[in-house]
View (cartoon, rainbow, N blue to C red):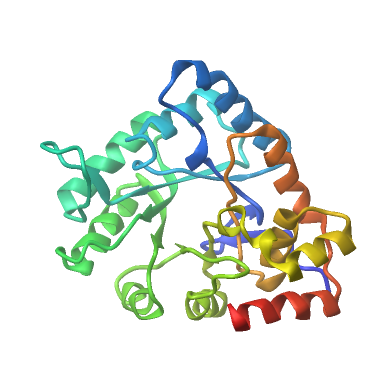
Length: 280
């Protein structure tokens, strides 16, 4: 049976299951901006309805780029962003900061940069071990109740942390590192699938090295597609809760990634790819 092509985040927000991660869009050099905007716009033209960004990506510059490229946004487009990682004033280093006052300020800045009144899915980029989780999620819950946030997600959490978080507030999504050859967070994926929580894997193709595996190269040859497309097709096939967000700064790679949604895996090929993770 083919996998569903859409997912309802939080039970009510429908998006296509293959999204786009904006992290790799360049924002530092003015001469790169036109090409980056073209990639973002092409993503929407290709039917992508989920774009992932974060305050950490260019200290907000990535959010501003997406707004320049896509605002006013199509009605069916979800741009999700992340807060909880900030630059230290003295050194410029990145650091976790889940204190409520910092999260509130970050959300206000994100609203301004994205040119919206409400962030439909806001994710906590990392849990700050120096701040009680109840305080961090309580601040996000307050922002939701104030109408600035629609749904709350987490990033890079364990199954135990997800369970603890769900005792505090409804969790709509989890964004963890996960791919064909790196399945450390399989228990988190299983918990998400059981609870109807969206699972947004990042590093979806293992930095492009998954194609070095003979099994992946063989599957790509059999299907007449690329190794990257095999990896993305496997993710979509592996769980209906899976919403991959591959990123790129190239229109050609974007089109290659998007085409992976149409690839069907046979049961025999799926079993061979599944076996890769058992020995990874």
